[in-house]
Amino acid sequence: MKRWTLLIFISLLCIFFCINTSDAILIGFDPVTQDVALGNPAIVNLFITDLGNYASPSLGAFDLYAYYDPAILSFSGYTLGPYLGYIMLGEAWDLSLGEISPGTINFSELSLLGVDELNALQPGAFTLASLTFDTIALGSSALHLWYNIGGLSDENGLPLYEQYDVYLQPGNINVVPEPATFILVGSGLAGIAGVRFLRKKRSR
Image 1 (spheres, rainbow, N blue to C red):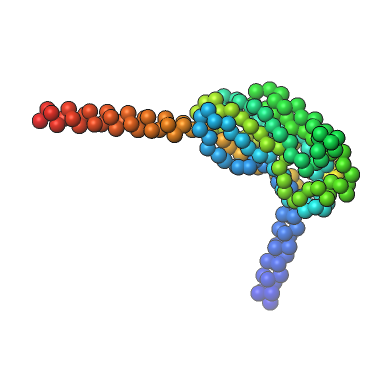
Image 2 (cartoon, helix red, strand yellow):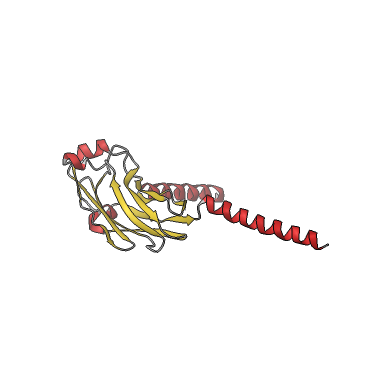
């Protein structure tokens, strides 16, 4: 009897977690972590996943804020993805404010497509925007997200947070010395070691 009770309990737990994970939407950065040589641009994508796969729920609008360290990175631009409709064709509006203060960027888009058009356009996971940063100093910059509750809605204009759990995944950009710097430093250290070795040899 105890064995059957345990099996039923485990089955209920599995069902519970399967239902809960299917009701969750993830928004985050890709790659989650990257190393970029100082002076080179850093490119990171802002993605959403766990939507319907060419079915409801789809994303009808988003209003997101990204935060970074302005002492390490300098924001240089963004490109919105095509999955809420083509802005040039009037299918969506780019309502982004861009960089509103050092270290804070706003991305916002509203689809003007109908429900069926939006569902047919969107896979279960896609890129919302691509962000480009200039690397201006060595160090590590965390990337954080925050969403405007009223600005994150489905294909019917209903708030997603009322229907699903929305998780935000942070990211990180590590700005490292250029490989040439390592070679120069290594060569310099090898040269110093060689000079010391020769001096010791002569003094004997």
